[in-house]
Length: 84
Image 1 (cartoon, rainbow, N blue to C red):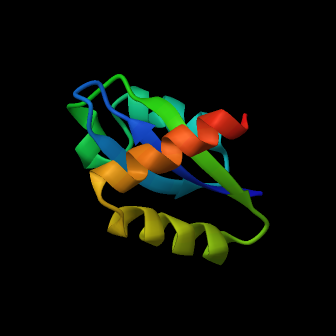
Image 2: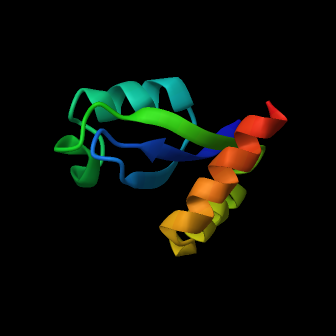
Image 3: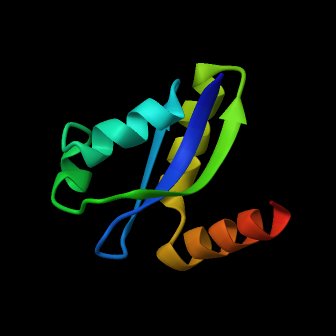
């Protein structure tokens, strides 16, 4: 299983990525060994995630997340929390 995800950083910004092990990836971000962007914006929390059978699909969705505006990402996060 692969995941495309959006993290909320401590400064309120959003970061998008993909991972095979989502929990481990979030731990890596919070240890300062994840993406350069998140190192100075810790702690990060999971705001939104989608699961995929295929790595390429997760990567495509991550790219789609990166093309969204901040406002569009917030709407996606809100809609996802209402579904849960």
